[in-house]
Length: 336
Image (cartoon, rainbow, N blue to C red):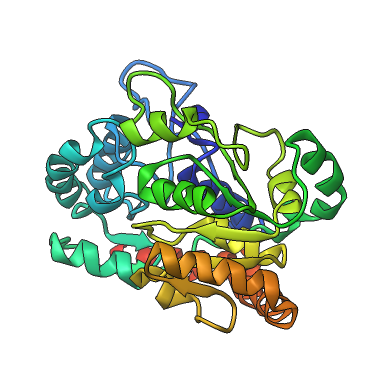
């Protein structure tokens, strides 16, 4: 699924892991397939530790292979039933059987990794039998270098002027689509969502509704070739998500020194501080007031931008590499 998920949070997190592991002595094999397959030999290559970021049939095959070879198995819980709901047509109905499946799948692991204590609590409620480690997905600050140089091009391309409120990532109702668009309807600021969205049969009704609506100050860009352009063009990152396991785009916005306005959901309260590195909101009126305040109060705007960068620096890939190394070594020592 890598080719389809490289624009997703799962794909980004996986790339962060591979980049971080490049800073260690571990040899990373990104494909499990044994291309030198011979009769009576396994189709899965040799390995010392298996680390799966997805939960589909090939991941099950790798997991079963690890267990049969008595090799340490680490499963990364990027997905829960709770954050699967409200993503595309039918996803909410599918979330209930998915919960049972994930309980079975994650419970096979010698160690489960998840990006927040919020997610850990969700998994424990299923319950997951395996020990769970919390590890930030991290932010690749180097991949954002030079974003400022793209501001003029991207603002010109999408006809943006004045204060621009923006979001980044796949367009889902779960990520606060209706709140984002309702804010655009009730203000005169430019609102732009940088990221792909479905238009076919699996698109949810809310995605179809809002991406087709004709509002002069609301733009859906679809996929963009360089994510840096999004962070260059926008001024206030608005992310009214209903459910997140962490939210990599929040860290990317913070790394770019953008003022951030978030929903007051538990996972954001775990990582960020209202009034210090972001503003947190509970209702549409809260979001509108927060955006107005940042527009009017330049000192607050600059304070949040500065502190947001400090927060992002606590989630660098150097730190991620240390955390991964610790988890691998401890899991290996406890399993072998």
